[in-house]
Image (cartoon, rainbow, N blue to C red):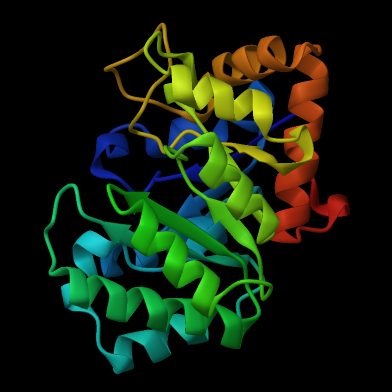
Length: 260
């Protein structure tokens, strides 16, 4: 069974066939799925998806591109959601200097605040970092190391930085990019990181793997990611699938008896 550790089925890209697509996931060998909030609307939709599908869990948090919408009242609202049984993480949160939609100081302020919320709620974190590697790591080390754990989503850093995150107790999230021909550094990272510290993810509808690059992504395509990880590790596809399933269950603290 495949565990998609990071998806966005609340995205409008799934507006026409969301229910049919999700309903078929367990039969397609995918369960559980963690749907990850990125905006206030996305958090609301994520909670609704967890209520509708027994195999869908949720993460609540505000992406750095949208932190201008935050205030302490909305933090309190999300913290309340963190008490729900099927909300298993805070995310995705972090820093994004690529799109630069919000001032860096504002991104840092709400990144630190949401890390604190995760600690208050006792939940792991799902971290977004783009073109902000040093600032992200420095904040993680100062504010969150050794507390609730979590995953560096869609990892894009160096092998050396992966080692530093592993030393802090964080998992490394790997998705469709690892199948790209030009993903030399990420392939090196996937070889280097111990299998027990890798999570697989789609970030769907984005980042579809080869041979679907550029098309809408969905959780079934993690099969192609697992094929590459298995090849890089010199193990069977089944071993890679089972190990990453176990890893995600452990990080998100989902009881195994709840496996769909």
